[in-house]
Image (cartoon, rainbow, N blue to C red; front, side):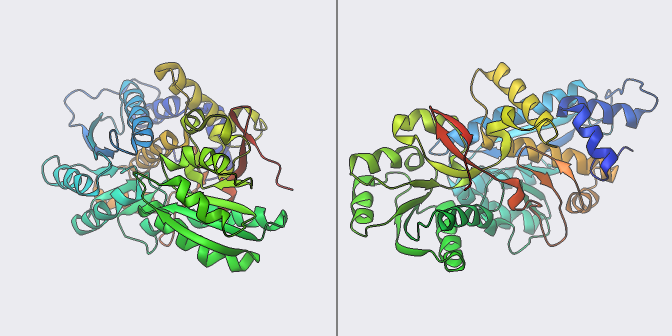
Length: 401
């Protein structure tokens, strides 16, 4: 078996491959020996479930995730599968509703007998699914960001987005450098927003930042003019917004209309070009931490992630005719981690795959370089982020001062 997850030589090989489709092909050939074509005829497929918010309020997350997973699984199967077996992908729509996500997970576990579940898309949808997967000893690789998903660590639960505490640190250290010490925090009242507010409240004192106001609003129907009026009344020097759509895309416009002319900082959940299109010119200058996928072409050629990011971006955009987003990247990484764990385990026994997943090291993904451990089921740190901004309607690297 070829282990692409460890060692300098292996990382160089990953750079040379540059795309998960080719990577899977090489793995399949290695397992069959001497470059002979792997046959999957007569072999039971590996059942993998996926729960995404294809519809509902978070469809801008779940849509790219679904498309990405379908694209990758097709490539894997066309290249011979994993361990000589094809993947049978079963995608279910949460509708951005936690109860529906939980019901979907129950069906995938009880009726479909899946090896693992990828998703859900949001932190709110993940919470009940996490409990269910722990109870049933089913691997879950969430595409949602809240650190509470993996802290405390659940034996069978992992996630691919960077930690919200690290995103908070990026924002706060940038505010500190720019001497913006009195800020307003606003956030959706969903799982992602709630956890973000908690992290910011906890971390702000470490950076000498005073949170003058911390306001939660309805994630589905936010009253942004009222929120902006409250912020303005506190004379804040900057605003931090922690939410998913629609507020994520529209808060900049509400601030402009309300005469609140201070810098806007967004969470790492802002990483979707669709939000810039929806928010329009008002989003210019918005600052946020995110993975390198959005600025892939601008990276140095020596960057470990560049080849993979550029190839994924090219594959996705040519196939679907839309911009790639960090959300699709989270699903990309979930497939990557699961397939590498299966290869490393040399088996589809759920416990062996779980153990292999927990010990993957040096796996180059879209969100960063993953280093899992028994105490860290995310495997990313602050180095997975770069500070970005909106410039001329596009994402660009932001000067960090």
